[in-house]
Length: 269
Ligand SMILES: [Ca+2]
Image (tube, rainbow, N blue to C red; front, side, top):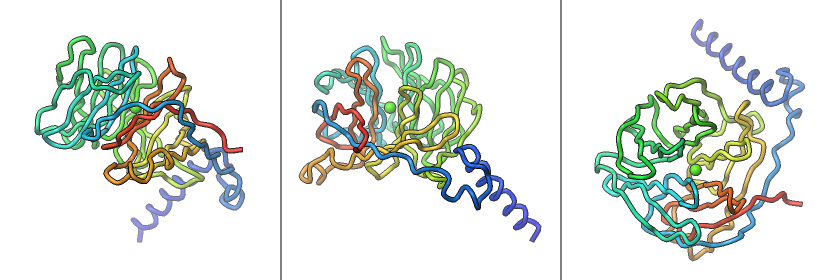
C-alpha cells in the first residue's frame, strides 16, 4: 500500500508538472480545458526529388548543399551522401553488420550517427568519412538533432527527449513531450530549426513541433498526403526530416519512399 501511495503521489506530481510547464496552473479543475489544442499545419510541396526505394531511412541532415542520410537494418546500414538538388546518391559507406544505423546530426565537421541497441554513437569526419565510436548512450538510439555546438537531443522511442553533452553524450536533462497534457510516445527522427524541435512519431505520418524548453507540442503537421496510393504500397513510415536553409524548406522522406519532398508547413485557414 505504501508503494502504491508513493506511486500515486509521483504520478500526481508528474501530471501537475506537465500542466504547469505547458501553460496551465496545475489545478486539474482549471487546467482540463485551459491549454488550447496545438494548431494543425498542412504540408505544401515545393519540389520532388529522387529517393532510393532500397533505403531504409533512419536520419536526414543537410550541410552546405549535401544531404546526408542514415539507413538502418543489420547488414545494410549505411551513411549516404546525396545531391540535395536531385536526391541522387553520390557516395555510400556501409556500417559493420553488427550495427543498426539510426538518426544523424552534424556538429562542426563531425556527423554523429546513432545505433539502435548497441549504445554506440558513431562519429564520421565530413571530409573523409570513416566511422569511429565517439561515445555511448544508456538508451536505445532512435533520433538525434543538434541544438547548438555543445548539445544534442536524442529520442529513444519513448515520450522523452534527452539533452546531452556533445563531448561525452551524458544526459544533461530529459523532458517529457506532451500534447494537450498527454505524453507522446514513439518519438523518432528529429530536426532542430527556428528554435523548435521537430519529431515524427514512429509508424505515423505525423510530425510534432515541440517547444524544447517545456516539451509541449506547439503544432501538429499532417504529412499523410505526400505519397500517392500507389507509392504507399511498398513504402514504410515517414522517417526523414532535414531543414534546408538555402531552400527555406524541409526535405521529407521515409523508409523505402520513392521520393524526397521539399516542403513548407502552412496554417490551415
Ligand atoms: Ca533530421
